[in-house]
Length: 518
Image (cartoon, rainbow, N blue to C red; front, side):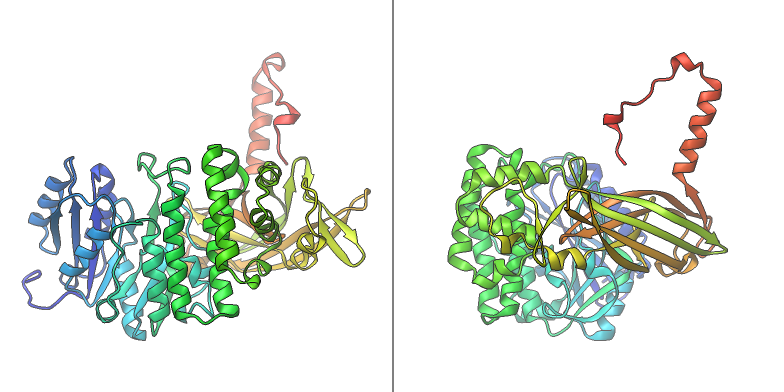
């Protein structure tokens, strides 16, 4: 019985909870604000043997709100078992997995269920926003996708379980989270199997449904404490899922490439490698080497972007010292951008941005070898074909993204992007990417524009993507209202002028040129 009716809920939200403390309150508040009526959804909290006040808090919620339920279990130490138990207790047509320190957009359940039911989806993915430095997929949410597959969209970028699954689909294929050892990558093993079995997967991109948070006190396992043997055993099992459903060929290579990039090579680059304990890095490098040699076809590494091709080459050949040298260089890489012009005519914003990739004191350089552009690296004995960035240099672009300061929503603004190859006096070259935005700001985010929006450039150059903040804010007094643009560069200039007039010259301290960035 739910809210006085015998109707089964349309959605069951399953939440594993362990020592959640006050961090669960944002989720609770978002559940109580849902636009979907309480009679049409339920939340099943599975308390994984918490030792703080979480059990009492959940029991009080369940007593006050009939559509919020609690199951208490002995501590399992990992989210898989609580999620599986939550599914066993769920009564909804769809099951939505949510973590206890994340939260939902107010219309998330109604919109995701409506989109999924309309299209007969087995899996529904709602647009995500990251908080506290939490990364979320971006390219996947450029537009709504009523029939997304691993072949026609970047679904593989989204492997966390924070999605809506049709309950009958989960039961038909016995889709559950793996319990026992290894416990790592349990999301990946379940979700990639779901993608491969799903008859229809929908991506809802015009509303931020899921807010993914990174807590400062979450106790996430760091690189130094991650057990390489357990982790890469789980990764091999994930590859087994792919291999069981996808024949050898371009699609399998593309899927394998996802784990090679993000779960393997990203651990051997930049700060992540340099700040890791030496013994741990050696163990990870050995695991990466073995998987490349044993599991991946030649087409996997060959299809990587240039920097990853080089990393894979060094890793496969046990060149850990050279990986460290490359990491030192990569640590200095950053995106840079400047606004070349902006104007607001009524509600139409026009903006031109130039952006590039920098390393050290200047743009990332490439040298010319015949008709090829070759990346200039601090590592010797890297074949020219791996350093060839001719295609990548021309394929780069700059996007302009608006991020809502209050809510965390991110939307791509429509942009026309071009690239210019600039040759320096020493004969080396670099790419400058220009993007021009022209948009009626009242239409941004489907008209939900109230608040302050910070603009940033998303630079993709040499197949590397990085964000850089632009000194522009767009403020809207209400949804669909005519915007106001704040140029922070002009504001700071005026502020300095005021300070100079009011503060005696001898008290002003000029910043060191070495501490400034363009």
